[in-house]
Image (cartoon, rainbow, N blue to C red):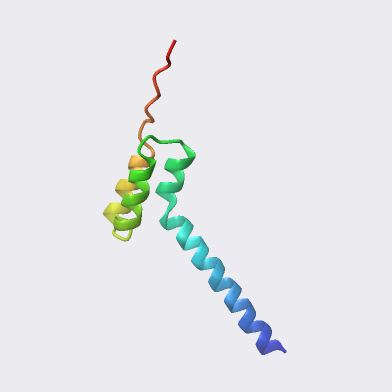
Length: 75
């Protein structure tokens, strides 16, 4: 029984780590969407295709924190 529980715990820990790494990988896109950034889709695409490079991920993160354009208010 102990061996079976050990494998189950390893599987849960592995699953948790995979989910955590995916959240960290897509963090720039998550931040951009949460801030309603006007270029959120472009930030998601940059993160998806170039996030594996440190430079692409950092660029996407910085871009996600840039100022959000306000939509003009019509009167």
